[in-house]
Structures are given as C-alpha cells and as structure tokens.
Length: 195
Ligand SMILES: C[S@@+](CC[C@H](N)C(=O)[O-])C[C@H]1O[C@@H](n2cnc3c(N)ncnc32)[C@H](O)[C@@H]1O
Image (cartoon, rainbow, N blue to C red; front, side, top):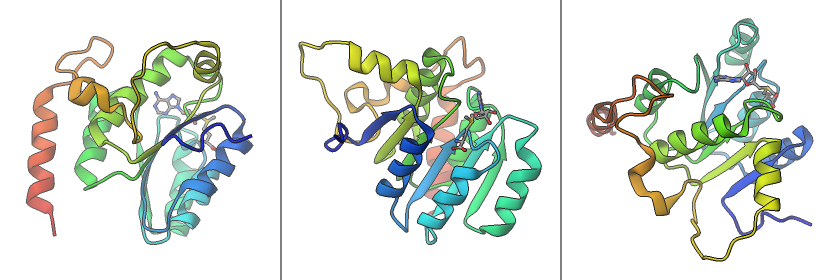
C-alpha cells in the first residue's frame, strides 16, 4: 500500500523505498536539493531523472569529495557543495544558487537522530519552500506512524505551510549564526538575478 499518495511530504526508511520514490516523484525539469548525497549513488539517479533541471547536492563527509567530483563530471546538471546541513552558511549558499526548489530530499542517514533530521528539514523547507519533500529517517517514520492526531492541520506542499516563515528563525541556538538578514539578502539576490 502506498501511504503517501496524497501527501507532498514522504517519510521513508528503506534505501530502496527512498530510491523508488525518487523515481516516482522527480520530473525532468525539477530543481532538487539533496541533503546527504554521500558518494552520489542517489544523486546519479536524480540527475538522470531531471536532465533539464538542476541538482544541488550537499554532504559534510570528506569521503564525498572525490566521488561527488566524478558525479559532477558525469552530470553537468549536478553541483556539489561540501558543507554541514546544520549550518546557515550552507543553506545560504544553496538559497543564492536557485530560484525555486521543486524537491527537497533529506537523507542524513536512515538511523540518524530524528530531532536533528527534523530540524534540518524544517529550516531548509521553510526557507526553500519545496513543492515536494522526501525524508529518509527511521525515527521520524516511527513517530508519524505511532502518533495519533485529533486536529486537522495539514500542508499541501513539501513544507509546513501552517508555520509560514516561522521556520526561518532569527536566532536558533543549534544553528548558531543564523540571521534573518540572510533570508532578505537571498531574496534580493534572487530578484536581481531573475532572467
Ligand atoms: C546514508 S548516507 C546518504 C546516502 C545517500 N542519500 C544515498 O541515497 O546513497 C548519509 C549521508 O549524510 C551525511 N550527513 C550526515 N549529517 C550531515 C550533515 N549535518 N550535513 C551534511 N551531510 C550530513 C553523511 O556524511 C552521509 O554521507
């Protein structure tokens, strides 16, 4: 059963389910931001799926560098940015590079801390406002399937619309150097660079 058919936010754990979903969701013109590209195995899949789009891949592992360099050579639509997804500098770099985000993919590791994964998702998605999102994380999947809800607050895109811009925090301890100024600067840059 596909539980996610009506939602633009998908949470998965199994890497194969993750990749099957990428294949189902990504369109050929999509601008995709991939957090946690590792050595680029899924990046290659995404690059094939979006030949007329753009893929910005992020990873903070030294192991990624040489592999992602090869991916960039093989796929001109891929740009790798080495960096920590928890840091504002990384988000700022990406935000200034793209005019829209069709798809945000967050895979910091299936067993990675769900709290950090959610925080990364919340901040990146609030800023980039993706049409669709896929998150690979066991803890978040468990939480969503285990929890029961009694009120109806639901978003229709890949970010939490009910929170508006609240996810773009002026000050957040864990994301130390975040400043709302960056967001405004990014918007200004994007306006200036529009075709
Ligand atoms: C399971 S691997 C990703 C696999 C990849 N998505 C795939 O499908 O082949 C998780 C990756 O997340 C990266 N990662 C974990 N925390 C990160 C962070 N804070 N910033 C950037 N990358 C991070 C790790 O370096 C690792 O390469």
